[in-house]
Image (cartoon, rainbow, N blue to C red; front, side, top):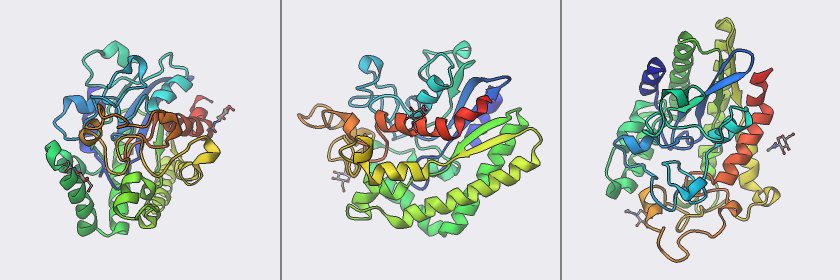
Length: 321
Ligand SMILES: *[C@@H]1O[C@H](CO)[C@@H](O)[C@H](O)[C@H]1NC(C)=O
Ligand SMILES: *[C@@H]1O[C@H](CO)[C@@H](O)[C@H](O)[C@H]1NC(C)=O
């Protein structure tokens, strides 16, 4: 477990380029016996509470629909996608605890553990950018964006990230992992933040194209690597098409809004700026189930459940066979 944890620190990912990417590792004999999660804030179960970062969510209105109404550090009104995997894979637990959560110990982690952390990514620059004070969060978002486009062209950055992903997968294999699930990227140009900031309400199609290009490169790399590593079963889940469908036609899935988040104005708030709306009358939408996004970047519990169901049905459920 310690070895697995240390690999995480070598493998971080840039936040606003790849918000939905996560790594899921299923340790299997006859069936899935444990779920080990790597990724960023989209699947962080609260590790960010214990690390110095400006990206936090352990205060209201986060967690208002979580059991007990607890703000655990999940960037959601309730559970995140990986919590639903734990339930669907029959691990006897409807959530995955954070590795740094003092309420859980090594016995709990035998069924699964989350090493994901907000602001982390494959690229170490992600976490550097996001260690900052709450007051400067807008500035860091801006910096992160600028870094991406000044240091790299999109194809070069894609190649660089896919190379990091490959090294990470090979390292996990070296540690004994054989069944590994990896999601591609969602349509990040349709995040409320990007709509408001870049695309004047529409989706930023440049970002979406970058996400699709990354997914293609990732799938190619995984196919090559899988063929090289005896006994490896590495699967990339196609999240892009499904999630884009939800975002472009929210009504078909029972949502009222996909263009703004439930928290605050729904256009820029996440973390502390979202928390600032908690006490305001009407500061959050009354029914988060009607929204695809909880804050300007992260999906609601209901959207996460839907995506998790789709990924289980299409990809992750088949590890059991
Ligand atoms: C962040 O930016 C938004 C939109 O530009 C602005 O309304 C908000 O006040 C800023 N927040 C902080 C904490 O500076
Ligand atoms: C997943 O499969 C179940 C069982 O077949 C089905 O009820 C559910 O609607 C599916 N969900 C999605 C999002 O595909």
